[in-house]
Image (cartoon, rainbow, N blue to C red):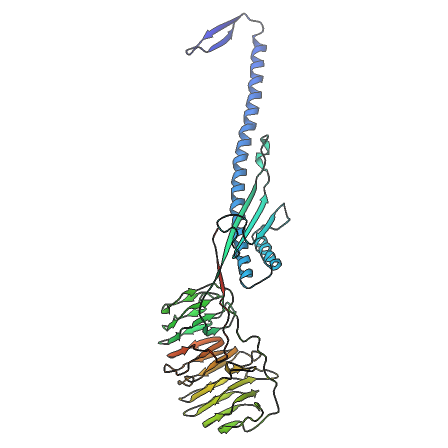
Length: 437
């Protein structure tokens, strides 16, 4: 016999009579039903717990793929900034993504590079590069839930190239080494680059350095790396982390070396009837020396001038070179109060270059001290050499460039860049970029 019991709220329960003979089997049926419901409930609870774990993994993957897209967009911009073709740009994107854990074609990962972007605020902008990385995810613990499928996470980044519109270059440090400080202004140094730029190719965080207390005034400052110290004054902007700044004379070829002439002690007037003369070994300047127009090649030696001597010449290039460079040859050394009054040729293979050290020479240090360089018109071009430059605050040169591997300024100097008709060359303005989406 089964009795009905009514509880508050109207809910009915059944209670078997003590006399009921089927009570035990009924109770066992109820316990079995509860066991099934409990098992189903636990499965659902485990499934939802697993889903929570999987969602956290998918969110982490989303963050990772976005970081990879950012890195790839930066690599793409760096490649595009120096004019690489589309195939190379795509390869840079794939390499950067792989370095961040997403390799194209592995586990369903896809990487696309779009120029211009196909969507977003920069859609159709030819200076913008879009990188999209898609990565299908897996079901892990959430596989216990029916109807649940894993998502595909996606990262998207857009880099915008900024074409700099800036001035010509007066000072350029060419060293690409991350350990180098390309341009240093020491002590009480004050360098003024009138209407022109101070540039550096090193990716070092202090590739242009005024930590020694020096001061520089320029139109713009540009560097592949960063700047350190204060006292950097510009009328334009300070550009850091730019693309590499090209050597404007890298394509020039040295003239052939003719038979050697003498003497190696230059004094009075040095005639150059054939336009190119060569000297073997060290050359020194004494008294007041004038060079006829032409090219003067010093092989396996240095050019030095001391004290009150002077060296003058119009349409002149002096070259240091060596057929077999060693560690101790080929430097310029101008000390004391000697005066250099050299004007570069305006045409020909050495146009615009007054002093040139062959880029194949080993790294050495040239010295310009005592105010000797105030009247050089043209470029001092020393691509493999370091330079210690004291300079001249009373320069009369309308156009002078200093381009070397590393440059240390130790005195007050002034540079002008009124170079029209002189024959000098300037590097193209580098391209910077930034992530905009």
